Image (cartoon, rainbow, N blue to C red; front, top):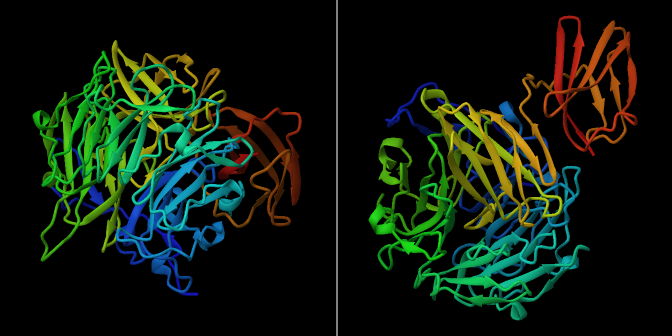
Length: 597
């Protein structure tokens, strides 16, 4: 087998060589940029596949898989915190992917969409390809199982699947799957709840044939049922209204969402914090400018892209709105390009949102590279409270931009990240609306995780500027239930669960050091018991503590001169999830993570 990289260590530059504006700064992460295998990428998406609290990455290679050529491999990278990213593709079993794909003009493999379709708490992965799709079930032990054939979502050899969208269109509590296709009609698979999906494309009337790159669910008419906006390359992009009976109707013109071709990427935001969500679509500017459909209380949209100065991004692809500088409003980054000839081509574009006015500050931030950008995701890979950017490129390495807002901006230090867990709704809570109240001013996020060439499961991020407390959080779950959560302090990651008003924080001030080979703790994940094994005659008294994600000590035990000790948690009523252990041995303290099944 050809050699492959195993570890990607995140190396932050010692000083900035990039000019910055208003203390905002991004810099490419050297640890990613120098890895030759990470090139020719379409989709990029993130999820915490191993449930250890960090965002892991899946990268989609454009190439047809060749076992002996590691540059053709799509990659699963596990986030090991301060130790960087580790390539776990082979041990995860996702490596040996479909080898029967034909040659596609945009690549043989396109997108990666994370979604927990069986609600077992572990993210599963759908891969959209040219000539046959793949569904990989997360087994919960770090490995995945190919369930494509048994699930019924394999597509066809004549299909050119560009994107997969997990969403609960029928609100039955599990995720259904919509597959965009550039050659054939799009497909809607209904989740039967037993690992099997049924193709209901024709019945639902979602079998659009406009050569689709992306789609996104949004409840336009506010009847709880998610509607669907489909972005087409050849043909009009279309809004389909969910009738609530498994069928959809085309209402594009009524809601004034016409985009007459060349549609590529899409994202949803609330750029002016008025509670009405807005839709942005990337096009090929020379053919048709990008539209920015601004929502209204009445439900009708208005294209304000030209007025706001965000209509031209060249040959646009992936787009993301996010609060890059933690100043309360959502900024916009778009990756672009089709060809680079003699160093000339479309540049990626960053628009800073200042109170509803967009300014192009791409050059001053140093994020206006000339490349053939495709996939884009924003997430907090280093858990410092600001959002970083990952760009998938063709013909060159992908780029991970580290955000230095938390290190350089004294005014906008505060933030909150919110994880959601559906109970009556789908486990990922795709389709939720989150609202925070900061001294009477309200800010909103629409959560679907969907993007061009992928879908992510990640915390919902709000910058909070100078605010140190949130007065109130409300979540409108996909089920239609709206729940309120009490005052929270800033600068933490919290988990909100449908039907449970208790807030769980995953910020615990422990220095994680799991590399200590002197102590062996197993199994991990555990069920009712764990075993601790120490070097013989090395230690006297040992104090073992188990700490919940909210920082509460839930188990505390002294062990006298241990060599091997079995700890039983049968009577502790521990909930499933992430815990931290702490071993105190004199002045020596060892800490790490344990996962309860």
